[in-house]
Figure 1 (cartoon, helix red, strand yellow):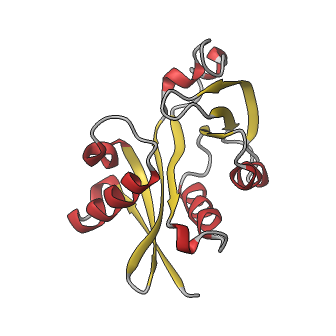
Figure 2 (cartoon, rainbow, N blue to C red; figure 1 turned 90 degrees about the vertical axis):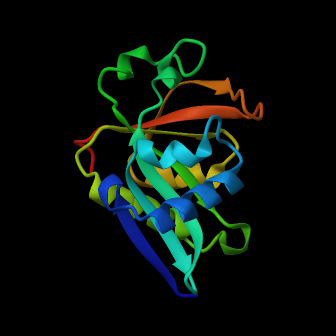
Length: 163
């Protein structure tokens, strides 16, 4: 299958692309708050297209600092060095297991080389954990239960000097 990837900065995101991002993010089903404004937290967004239809998304956004607190990952020492988060990842069900998330992540990491980053994922999401570990993210802190859907989450961190 032929996929095309477009990387946007906050400053060059068209209203059409913002709408596509918002639509796929709503399908992800893991967002609290006004979903229509989430793109404004993002430094970069990647949208994957198949036959001109958006099928996958990911972003680098401002870090969710509450993750570092003792009732979650309990990694307060990281709060001072992590400012950005790899997140808002979603691939449409029909397009999963085709390397789309891995490509989106690679494009975002290339664009944000040298930054200290964090990501969170479900403990049982082996595919995402593998992608993060393949990109030199390291699990830190303790696991905690999500307030959204009660799944257990874990924190991954990549320090900018890691390749």
